[in-house]
Amino acid sequence: MSSIPAPNQAPAPLRVLLVTENDPLYVRQFFDVFFAEVPRDQIELVGVTVSRAFHEPLKKTAQRVLRFYGLFDFARLLPRYLFAKLTGQSISKLAVKHGFPLLQAASVNSQEYIDAVTALRPEMIVSVAAPEIFKSPLLRVATIGCLNIHSGRIPEYRGMMPTFWQMLEEQPFVTVTVHEMVEKLDSGGIVDTLQFPLHKRDSLDRVISGTKQQGARLMIRVLRKIASTRSMPAATPLDMSKARLFKFPQPTDVQKFRAVGHRMI
Image 1 (cartoon, helix red, strand yellow):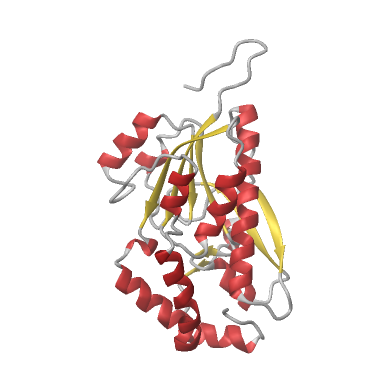
Image 2 (cartoon, rainbow, N blue to C red):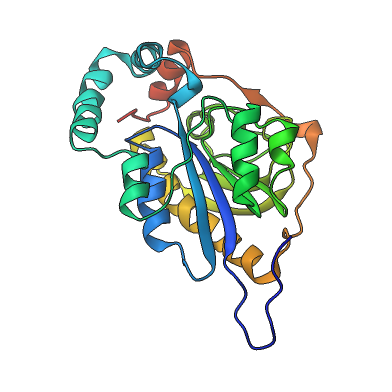
């Protein structure tokens, strides 16, 4: 149950659990902003869970990234990744630096993890590029609800790498969406959005970085609203007749991406 403040007493901070993936390059930029700017008098982070990217071994992720970027751009990206690793620029270390507790998980849908989350009494659970789909037992733990932030307009750009697909289809901007979480992927009602303008010839690197940083401020805005009302904002239901579900891009998709004038890095 959420605490009800006495008259003239400020409400207790909103209890929030964050679930994300171990990405020291792009997802970390979300948390660079979020951890620095989150108002602690309104929002209390009761735990931060950082899972493996794609929920797969590092070798398989490296192969996936190499296939996606190609040898030349992979060689440009690799020194940045190694520098981040060698200098300890991880989300976990960033959370600890800011004084936020970590909550480990082999799987967020395991009973062990659900029991640990339940003990934290979160009012909100927030997914930021979490590598697993949340099943109903976890979705039911938070007393107010669960939110996901997705770098695409839904339901048109559900699934993986929505930034890439919006750029490939030459949209004028990338839509960053905060939406309610349900068991079906990227299918909950829309709570809030922002539009990140695209250049005619742009780079995926610039756009992902920018949407992560601005997305952090969007999520803070949503959580502050929830903290003040202690309820989920009215969500706009999705028109699933427009729904599409994208998979991870293939090399042929990357060729088309470059053909329209965009760069990877």
